[in-house]
Length: 498
Image 1 (tube, rainbow, N blue to C red):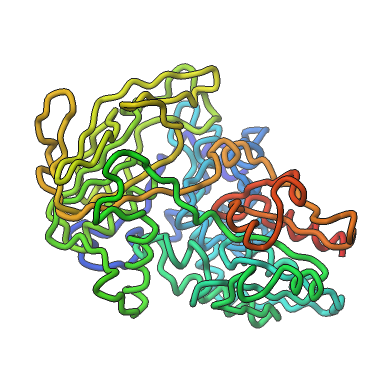
Image 2 (cartoon, rainbow, N blue to C red):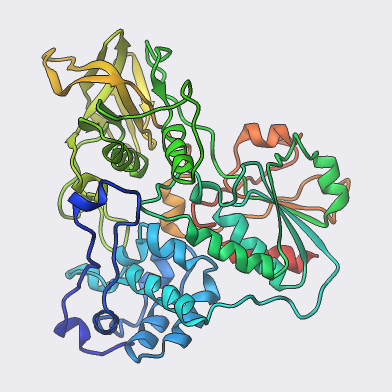
């Protein structure tokens, strides 16, 4: 695949980024594109490795990575686009915001820098749009079957397109005022500009997909109506229930979940006005972000653009090593230190810090010790007890001093004027890395065996609102993740049973 000796001849080249001094003043995308000749050289680094771990182990949707790398190297971009679309309905999204587990699993990553898979994929699809190769593909024959999809996030969009192309009548219900789910409200514009979503949605409308916004399943439409009207239902509602940090003083003013903070900025960028009594802004303030994951990084970049005076990010876990530890071999996801574009824009990062209490204008923290079990997910001791080792991010924008419990010395941010808290209830990363596919769930099989629902990223409260019982109606609840794990598999399953 590619040039047999390419990995020996060429070094990896990263796409350029806009200068920090320029990009922190707007919400336009940060990453630029490599010139086409340079990108074709990068594709030449894809070696004939025999077993493409990038495809079989790393990529959750099993993109045909070596195949379209070879087509790019041979300048057959149209064929590369066709291969990319075989497994991925939204490559313009994954090419921008996917963490690229395929690159971590690239055979070159054993002892070199991996092939630049994500930038190559992004340029394939963008070249396709520019050349007019991406066109609506309406079904030549209609089946007469109707499918309801609850949620217009990446999973819902991908499944809707696949089902519409099979000839089914597809209606997507979205409770928000705009389509896109977390792509629209959650991911910052500087990582994913929203015209990218609109462009794909227009293609889907031309293919016959019907979108209904401001419609909340379980409230505006009942599950009885959905069962009666549609031959199949796909629940792709996302995971919007946040995971809280329950410590004394959590009820104090100014503590907010990250998604509220990030979504408000998405709405401002779209031209909406946020009521003054609800507005959260970091302008002119010292900010503390609790949690070192992607959500925390998004809060850092957003706070920086809003004009924060100072930003500190604290993380419960120890600082990761620069290189893979012995118990974290290739091709597993590397537990190494990573810095995002938001970190490049300026913030202080502190490790092994656990939040103990909010006391008026003081946030008490302590250094913590991680205790690992055999699976290395363990627990962390914090003050009064143990906290699960899950992705928790809290952003603080407020009047508070951040103190070390052991020394009572102020941490570098000194005063934070308005505290905000960010937490995300996301599926476990282990299922993302291993590429496990969600299992379809049959609802009420004894009552009506022809009706079924496939839940993706479901929360208990959402199912309860639909009148579904987690124990009786959904015995094998499975969770997908950001890009719709097995997005086309879900559509194939529904199509096969209609």
